[in-house]
Amino acid sequence: MDFDRLDPEGYIRPEADLANVQPEYKGVPTAAADLLADEFGSQLHSAYLYGSVARGNAVPGRSDIDLLAVLLAAPTDEDRGRAERVERALTERFPVLFSAGVGLTHLQEVRSPAQRYGLQVFLRELAVCIRGEDLRPGLPRTKPSAAVAAGFHDDTRAAFARARETLATSNDPETIRRVCRMTSRRMVQVAFAVVMAREGVWATVLEEQAAAVGAAFPQWAEAARR
Image (cartoon, rainbow, N blue to C red):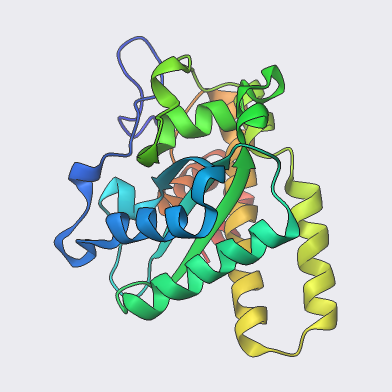
C-alpha cells in the first residue's frame, strides 16, 4: 500500500504545486504571501504553502489553509501575534477557508542536521514556496523510514500537553473545537507514523493514513476512521 506516493526508486514524490490549486482557492496563495510579507517584513526569509490546498484536494468550506513562515531569527511572542493576524485576515477575506494556520520556524532550525528527517523532509516533499528564497532545491531526497516517522512527530508529547492545558482552562466553544480537531488529526498521523516505520509506506491525506492504520492494525480501524 503506497498510494502511488513513491517514485520507482522508493523516494517520496513531492506533492505540493501551485498548479494544483483549485479554482475556488484562486488568489489565496498570493494573498497569504502578501500578508506574511507585510507582517514580517525583512525578517521573513521564505514562506510555504502545504496541505490540501497545495495538493489540490481541498474541500471548500471544510478545508484549512496551511502555511509555514521561515524567519531569519527564532520566532518571538510578537511573531506569533503576527501569525495570528495573518490567520484572521485570510479567513475573513476568503469564506472558502474553514480556518488558517501559520506555523513559524527559522533558518538555522531548518538547516540544522537535527531536522534532516523533520523540517527538511517536510519542506521538500510537502510544501511549495510562495514567497522568498526557496530552500527546497538544496534539500535531499528521502525514503519513508522510522527516522522520518520520529522526525515528523518529535513534538507530539508537547502538542498534546498544550492541548490538555487548553481544554482544561478554556470555555470558548471555538477554541475547544479547534483543539479537538487538531489533536484527533494528530492521533491519526502518529498512528500512521507507526505503519510507515514498520512497512515503509507513505501518505499525507488523512483519510489515506486512516485506511493504512486500519489495514495494519484492525483494532484501530474504527477509531482512525472516526
